[in-house]
Length: 317
Image (cartoon, rainbow, N blue to C red; front, side, top):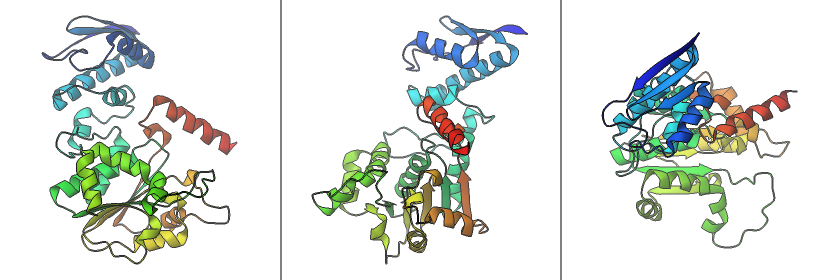
């Protein structure tokens, strides 16, 4: 049955006030995603479509308004995309309650799906957490947010970010420069996430003082890391020996998050992934949490989910 419903804005909310850019394009996007016809006025939106489609569109409108009122500031494109693509029963209020507060002046980091919420809650409760799944699901970014939040609160005294220095399907050859310059290309994604969480000047100062350390995995050998938040990124590129070495570096008062995508290993064919071995060996340890993401949890460009799904289907044939 086709129905028409109106959604009335709360005082202070409008698409323009929420900073959502071109209102016409947003309404077109609403119509396309929810298969409804949308018309807008000063303080209301009228939605016409099948019962279920209309209800989903109204929920999205309500979520947009709720998030704007919770943030008390303009929404960004990621906020809008999160709500438009929200396919779970988790409310925006529930996601907001799991938000991560990072450095002053930086936006709160909001989980963008039920799985991301589960992941943040697991990091808060467990000393060791594995975040497994495809690119774009927020595994590293959310781990970084928790690391910065815990550091600012004083729960840990250091942040250590590491990943294996493996080439991604192409030979980079000899890299000139200092040791830091040689490994920097491998660690750039970790720097990018860090600078999103705190001012670059402050982060650079902490890096210079070795309070925040960004280093290749090989540099972890022989160390004991106390009172630190440790992130191992791209763990699918660890060997079995490297993964065991890494897991045994954790000292008193430390938290450890391991992220990776077993389908994207750059190891040689004869090498077995340390991540795969860890998932097999540690699954019975109740104190370790495992959170598995799927292509439906992708929070980057909407097309990325379709690309990953298409590749997975091709591999299965």
